[in-house]
Image 1 (cartoon, rainbow, N blue to C red):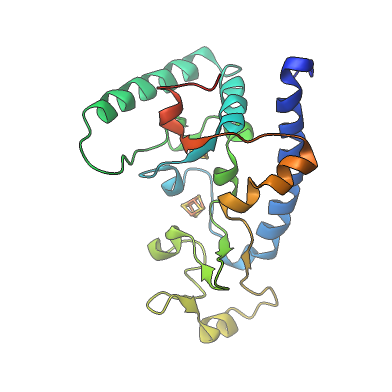
Image 2: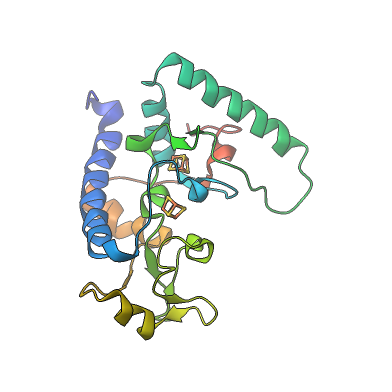
Length: 205
Ligand code: SF4
Ligand code: SF4
């Protein structure tokens, strides 16, 4: 990317993403016995809202524009279909499969947003509790160590795994990872955040 004045913020955001990746890679590495993510498992990319801030969305779009024309056309068709569905939706919360998911694989993997990078880990919540990823309840990440009924770590299951790597929660909430401290450190502004599909109705200026 050409880091001219217009693109400076996106370049700074790319530096932030490098930092974030390094941090998350370490977290995932430390949780290896509990992680069952694999290419083609795309449950976390479906039936949700996918919050994106303005800068994340601009970075995502720039990346999407570098993709093969055929993939771009598939994404455009998905977006068109979703916008149509949304127009006719009368419920409270419009949930959908991410339009960038093609054949159960993320077509924009290097450009995906902050929330997508944290999918699959356990999160620390404000009241010192740990929140398991939703896929734990579908037999995937952490399902081998959680007491799913009580929503706590099962000591019995942990001992049975015979590993020194403890199941841990991390400070990876979307709110925390896009907070002012990071904005100051990396000289970026995340800007307004909304479901990714909403940006196609009103793109960032
Ligand atoms: S951008 Fe990629 S990783 Fe994120 S929800 Fe969409 S398909 Fe999944
Ligand atoms: S986070 Fe869960 S749903 Fe997503 S790829 Fe990993 S195992 Fe599959």
